[in-house]
Image (cartoon, rainbow, N blue to C red; front, side):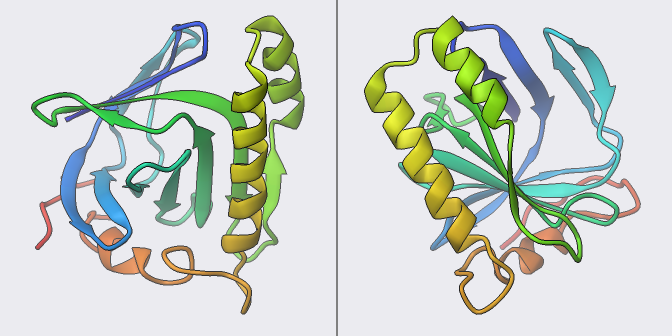
Length: 175
């Protein structure tokens, strides 16, 4: 399936293929193997590590959980993801703000300057700005590693990450 992430002006932020692994109470899980080509308006690259992405229903975020050496958690604040009619394409608009939890490190918010610049450049409506900030604050609290963290950010993702071959092999569908 295709993951198609856009910027607010419609330009490409990133596009890659992923495998739909399955779904649980948290949403739909996608797997991406190491070495998958990723394209964008800024150029292309290949994934350096395997990861799984959670697409929760009707939420303004996605969460990516990476195999080593990637960050343990990388949440993108975005518009509510939309599936194509046949479920083979996932589209969303990247709203710049990211919540990142590196392996063994503390959680941090990234790209606040980019959010501020794009807010002006693209004319983000006030309601979008409020929802992006509210979502970012919630993710920063929910994604904590300590007792303040909540699922799926604590351990639920491990089952799904285990389905993606860390050696760069193909992801296999889950139960």
